[in-house]
Amino acid sequence: MNVLRFEDLVAQGKVAGQRVFIRADLNVPLDDAGRITEDTRIRASIPCIEMALKAGAAVMVTSHLGRPTEGEFKPEDSLAPVAHRLGELMGRDVPLVANWVEGVEVKPGQFVLLENCRVNKGEKKNSEELAKKMAALCDIFVHDAFGTAHRAEASTYGIAQFAKTACAGPLLAAEIDAISKALANPKRPLAAIVAGSKVSTKLTILQSLARNVDQLIVGGGIANTFMLAAGLPIGKSLAEPGLVGDAKAVIDAMKARGAAVPIPVDVVTAKTFAADAAPTVKAADQVAADDLILDIGPQTAAQLAAQLKAAGTIVWNGPVGVFEFDAFAHGTETIARAIAASDAFSIAGGGDTLAAISKYGIEKDVGYISTGGGAFLEVLEGKTLPAFEILQKRAQA
Image (cartoon, rainbow, N blue to C red; front, side, top):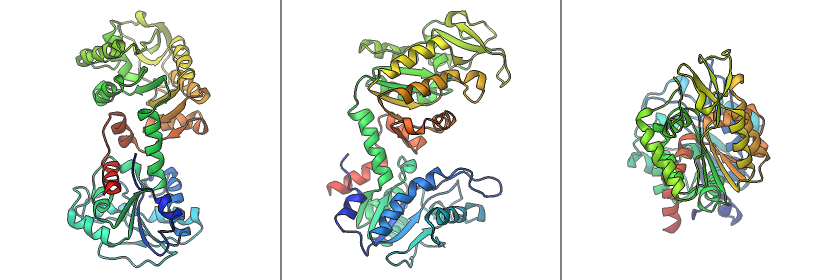
């Protein structure tokens, strides 16, 4: 994808003495006491900040945090815990600046964190007036927040439109590269795992992938709807009978291309949805009327694992069973370990998927772990994200 990259500007010596405004994704989870419970996004944002500082820039960084009301700053919306954590990780004092839209004092070699950008009036609706004020603060705008790349907001899109120079930071550039490698120029066979509770939320993704992938592995509640479409009983399992026609259409579209949607041959059932429910492995055509399907069976898991080990590229979004309950986690664990053992280039995204990767400790064995949930899904859907679109436009101008 043809966009200007921040590392290229650094390499060309065009950053020294410049005012650099980085839009990062520092939207981390906090507990009730306002303490950070997981800091992956903060750690992931530091390389871009350090790159700018080492190059001799005056550095401003902002992010959203939570869902504040625009125009009303409340203490719980403050990036103060993030400033503190950044300071600890970088070994320096990180000043936090409020009311920064009208102007910021920052000198080359200095780094300031600008308070929660979503508190600014007009942020979400991409106000031109706000975007122009932000753009006036800097010489170079760096978009490094893939988690917000699917939203056209003032601090992600508008500023990129009006800043003197707009470019992609290393995190955003890595996402662009990984997604292009997985979807635009994949090594075949290309296998996609799309799992989740509802077909309705992922239908457009399934339809889009059905045109491109060699194997479309469905899991969770989505698989139950596909089992119904294949004429199999699912008892009282979570499914969407109204979307059976859509599921059949996806199966037929894949078949017409000589590709496949593997339907489970065995499943793990229980009578209740609970961590201590007794698991029973059953053939897929033997599910009773009062059964709940909570995982794929060992035979299905083994077949899918063999396919994944032989794949050239794997896209993974969603666990294939209720992996939070250990009795129903074997399918997801088998899939995770097969992806880890495969020579394929793998890209994974989505909150539950990241939780599964973490649970099985396979972070180092996945080719690329995407930091954005909604943005990752929209790319799978075949959409061009606003952040990529504006940076491409600026690169061509």
